Structure formats: C-alpha cells, structure tokens
Image 1 (cartoon, rainbow, N blue to C red):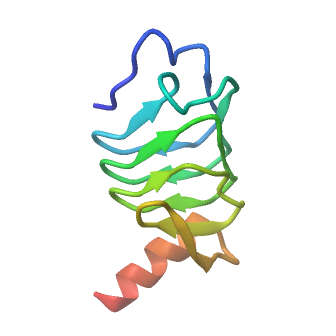
Image 2: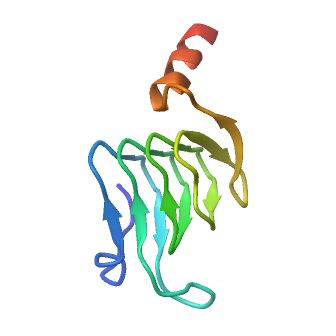
Length: 106
C-alpha cells in the first residue's frame, strides 16, 4: 500500500490507468517542498518504493523505476531511475515497451 497523508490528498492528481506500486511515497509538504500539484499523467507507472517529491508532473506512459527519487518533471514516454531520477530511455511504445522487452530478455 502506498503512503498518503491528509496533506497530500488535495495536492496529487492521478489520471486514468496509472499504476502506483507498493510503498511508493509522495512528499507534498515540509522543508524544501514548494506549493503546487503533483500530477501522475495517464498510463504512467510508479515503481516500488519510489519517492515523488512534488510538485512535479510524471508524464503520460512513463515509468519511474523502483526506489527512484523524482524531484523534477518526468517527460512523457520515458524511463527514469536513480537518486535523483534521471532519464535512461525514451519509449516509442509507452509502458508496454518496457514490459515487452523484459519478457523477451527472460
């Protein structure tokens, strides 16, 4: 289950077909976190134990890798990993590309 406190409920917008994996965290308040909305755009995937430090936008059909810390916007149809999260791949076919490639690699 993802952690969400009462301060984040009105600061995170989750569009259709978004997947948020186990233990993902949304930081929406506190020192160094500015006011604004965090938007998880259509079809994006947030990996296990990822941390989203808002306000940011996670673009449509993008993938945030497990354990990544997102501190700035994630472009649509990209894969980001690391601390802080950085783009490692652009996806022509969206999220399904990642899962199709993983299945082929075994």
